[in-house]
Image 1: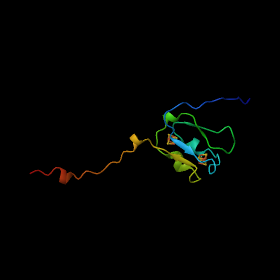
Image 2: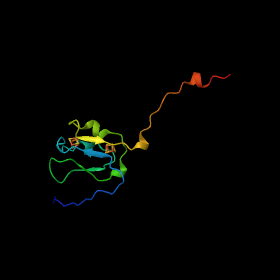
Image 3: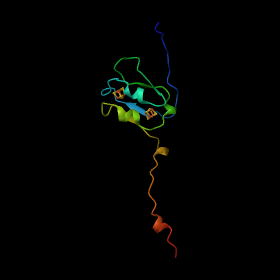
Image 4: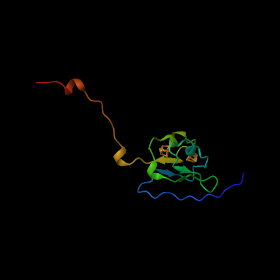
Length: 98
Ligand code: SF4
Ligand code: SF4
């Protein structure tokens, strides 16, 4: 099979969900394999961090960070609007009458 040259450009987005530390990342691309929506693409330079090709499609589940074997190589930046914290409601107290 003949190798084909592919040219890709990252999709423009207002927010980039991932940042990489090029000093720590060794370009193993495990984060690319685990991403369920395929937003990452291998770097054209071997041993370098992946390219975030579709930043607007991230689900913010964090599988890419969890699987990374090199702590600090990848950071997920969750947008402020997605940082919801649920609190258990005290039903007994809240339904008390009188
Ligand atoms: S957080 Fe999830 S969707 Fe976003 S890049 Fe990581 S694995 Fe892919
Ligand atoms: S961020 Fe982690 S999993 Fe992704 S290429 Fe770099 S070292 Fe590998």
